[in-house]
Amino acid sequence: MKILALDLGDVWTGTALSDGLQILARPYKTVKTEVLETFLIETFKEERISTVIVGLPQTLRGTESDQTRKTIAYKEKLEAQFPKYTWILWDERLSSKQAQQLKSPKDDKQKIHSLAAALVLETYLMNLQFKKMLQDDADDTIG
Image 1 (cartoon, rainbow, N blue to C red):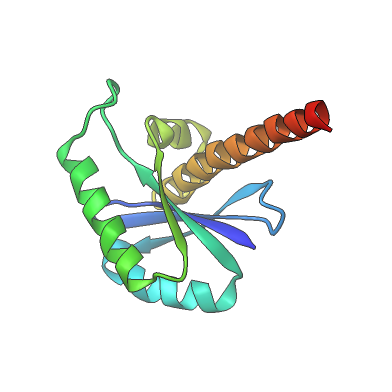
Image 2 (image 1 turned 90 degrees about the vertical axis):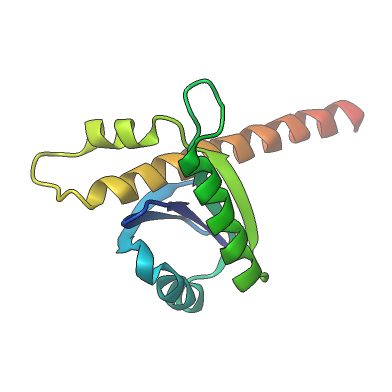
């Protein structure tokens, strides 16, 4: 099963997908936020997705902002609309800045959003791998 990541914005939402083994993250599509729900319906039909990661914007100090509260409310709305999937908020601090640095001059502005989603997804996948490695070490110690 794949993991979908969302970098929610007021106008644009960047998306990224993992591979089926949940190891690699790749930018997927950037869509207008006003049509995100339609995009999700189509994507859930086309891709085998189990989990949706929603980038959580926080201040550099880790506190909430207006955008943080809007993101949480929108994630809860989507979660209620699509209860079949696991929805997780994930720290996205600095992902947009990193995406801008990765973007080549010929990339369009919208690509930054999907790059940011891929960076958020990549940190989530690395965390999953780290937890798996710790669990495997614990199993080896016990067994």
